[in-house]
Length: 189
Image (cartoon, rainbow, N blue to C red):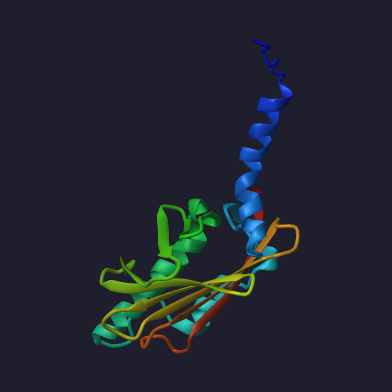
C-alpha cells in the first residue's frame, strides 16, 4: 500500500488558515474587528478636564440636595479616569455575540442582539446594549430606575491602527450633557 508523504507545507498551511479564519470571518460580514489594546492620545482627544468642568460643575456641593452629592461623585469618578495611568489603556474583545470594552479594571460586557443588565459604577442597575451602525459599534447604558444615559460610538479608522470613541453622558444632575471625543492608537491586536 503506498504511503503518503507529509511535508511541513501542509501543517503550515493549516496553521495559517486557522490564524486567518477569525479575520476572514469578520471581513466576510463587512464589519471591522475592534479587538485589541489602545492607548489614549491626549493631543488628538478633547480636553477631558475642561469638558468635565463645563458639564458637571464644581468639585464641591453647592447645596444639601442628594443630587449634588451624586453630581460631585460623578465628577470625581470621571476625573479618576484622567488621572489613573491604568485607565489610559482601552482594551476591547469582540466576538460575533459579545463586545467587551474597558479601561483599567472596569470592563463592560455587551451582547449583540439583546439587552442585558449590569451594575453601574455608583451602584444601581443599568440596561446595556450594543448595536452595529454601519461600520461603527454603539454601546448604550441606561439607568433602570432613573434618567442617566451613557452612549459610546466606536469608529475604527482605515488601516485599523487608530480608534475614535465619541462618549456622551446624560444625567439630571449635570448642568449639560457631557460629550467627549477620545482618540486612541492601537498598541496590540
